[in-house]
Amino acid sequence: MNPLAQQLNETLTRDNPHVAEMLSGLGKAIYMPKLGILSQSAEAKQKANVYNATIGIATEKGKPMHLGVIQETLSAYDPKDIYEYAPPGGKPELRAIWRKKMLEENPSIDGKNLSQPVVTNALTHGLSIVADLFAEAGDAVIVPDKNWENYELTFNVRRGAEMVYYPLYDADNRFNSAGLRDALLAQKDRGKAIVLLNFPINPTGYTPGIEEGRDIVDAIREAAEAGINVVAVTDDAYFGLFFENSLQESLFGQLSGLHERVLAVKVDGATKEEYVWGFRVGFITYGGLTEASLSALEQKTIGIIRATISSGPHPSQTFILRALTSDKFQAQKEEKYQIMKGRANKVKQLLDSGKYGDVWSYYPFNSGYFMCLKLATVDAETVRQRLLNAYGVGTIALGTTDLRVAFSCIEEENLEDLFDRIHKAVLDVASGNA
Image 1: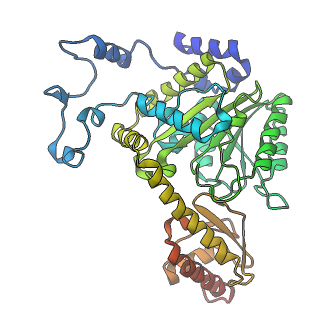
Image 2: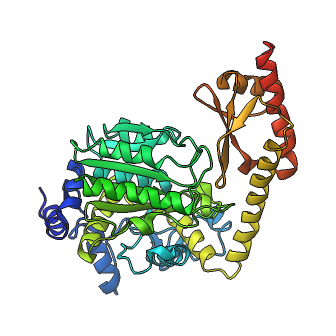
Image 3: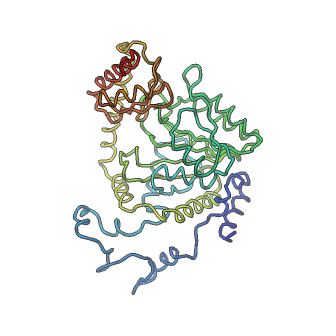
C-alpha cells in the first residue's frame, strides 16, 4: 500500500478506529498524491515567475488560450476563471462559500467539526464517491422501498453491496423509523451498514417532521450502540424545497458527532437548489470527527476524484460562485421557491377536492419536485402507456400501483388539466379501453 494511503489510514485508526473500519478496500488504498504533477504545478504557480512549463494547458499573452467563438458568449468572465483546470477538490472560493451557506441554513451544524466541502460532478458523482470509499461486496445499503433507482446502480451494481429495503411509510403515513431501526439492527452480524437518507424523498416528495427526524436519529444511535458501524449519508438533492411544517434542515447536523460508530456524510449541490441541472456542481462534506480525520477523508475523496474525472468543470463552478455572491441571489431564489410551493399546494388542493373520486389515493408529500399517486384498481404501467399514447402526458410508473408526477415542470395553471388527463387515462384502463 502506498505510504500516503497508509498514513491517512493510520490517522483515522488513531482518532476513530470505527471509521477506519468503514472504509472499503478501495477506500483504504486511495490517496491524493503529494509529489505528483498537481503538487509540482501548484508550487510552480507560486514560484515560477519567468516561465511555468508544468501543467498541460496552452496559454497566449499571459492568459489561457481560447477560441473567440466560445469566449464571445462568456465575455463577462475572465478566461482564467473558465478555461484553466479547476483543482481536483474544486474551486477554493466556491468550497468556502458553500460551507458558509450550509452553516447558515443548518443551525444544528453549529459547533460541529466539518470538513471543507469537496466539489463533485453533481450529486450522483458524490454518491458514487461514497460507494467507492465505503461500500464493499456484501455490505448492507439501507434505503426505503420507495427510492431513487440510481442507488441500486451506484451501490449494488458498481460496488456489489446488498440493498436492504424497509417500508417508507408506517401505518399512520409517517416516516417508518421503526422499519429503519429494524433494518439497521438486522446488520448486527455484519457489523456495518450504509444508510441513505434522501429528504425530500424522490419519488414521493416527503420530508419527515421534527419528531420523525428525532426518531431517525435515535434509530441510528441505537444501531451504533449495538456495535454497528453506520455510514449515515444525507442525500440532500432537493434541500430547501420544504413547503409545509416539516424538517427545515438536513439531518446531517444531528448525525455529526452522534456516536463514535456513526460517520455523517452530506451529499448536496447546486443542481436542484439553484435550478442549474446541467451545470453538474455538487458537494460532499464529512462531519463530527477530529480535524485530522476529516482532513484524511477529504484527501481520500480528492484522490477518488483525481483517479476518475481528475477535476470537475471550471466554468460551472465559476457561474455558481458568482451567483452565490450576488446581492440578487436570495430574492431570485425566493421567487422560484414561491412558484414551486404554489404548484405543490395546487396539486394537493386538486387531489383533496374530491373531483377524482376513489380511483386513487396519494402518498404524503410536502416538499421537493414530485408526488406519487397510488392507483386503486389499475396497473400503473398500463396507465402510463395510455397517458402517453392517448393524452400526450408523460409520467413515471413505479411498481404496479404507483405513478410519479413531477409537478416541478408543470405550470400551476396547467395542473388541473394534467390531473384531469391522468384521471381519464385511469378510467380508460379500468373500463378496458386502453
